[in-house]
Every structure is written in C-alpha cells, then in structure tokens.
Length: 142
Image 1 (cartoon, one colour):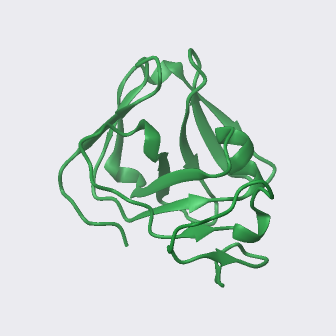
Image 2 (tube, helix red, strand yellow):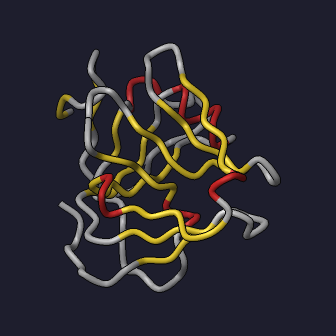
C-alpha cells in the first residue's frame, strides 16, 4: 500500500489547462502492459491509485477527453496538450489511477512494484529490487 496521507496532492497536465487534486493514495506501481507503454510513450507507466471520490478536477474539466479501450477501461487526456492523466478500469471499480508524473512535486509517493512484467518492452531491463508481477493476469508474483 502507498503511504497514506490526508494531504491533498495537486496535479495538472503539461499545459496546465486541466488541474486536479487527489488525496489518500492507495497504491503506486509501474505498469509494463502494452497499452500503458503506448499511452505513455515509454517502457512503462507509473501510476498512483486513489478512490474515485478522492479525486477532484479543479480547473477546466471541459478540456478533459476520455477514450474507452477495447478492455472497457477509460483513459483521460487533456484536449489541449495531450497529456495522459487518468486511468479507470472495470476491474477496479471506485478507483482511479493518476499518472504519477502529473502530480506536483510535493509528495513522497514511490512505486511499490512492477505489474505486467511478462508483457514489458524487450528493450528495457528492470534493474531495481521492487517486487515483480506477471503471468496471464499481470499481477501474479514472480
């Protein structure tokens, strides 16, 4: 579990059009699934989980656009700059995952593990000592 904090964490997209606040993180992890890799344009995405009720859009919600994936997950982006901001999965109702890079610098959240390592980019090697999960579900301990 991520360190519990009642402090509100501020965040925004790259251009600052969409601003949000979130509180009481429940998790923080690196996801290596192919969808996250494509959405973030990187070897993995780093996400912090929050209960949906603990996330509030504070500026320009009309600049937020949503994309429904083939797996019925929803990814939310800024219409102006294209920043990936939020991920919601039908497998985790009531949770929203925020791109850690879009939270302000005033937090001490750190990834606790890697998910979907069997689906990871072949050109990237995980070199840290965080627990790794993979298999068919992406969440089975390795």
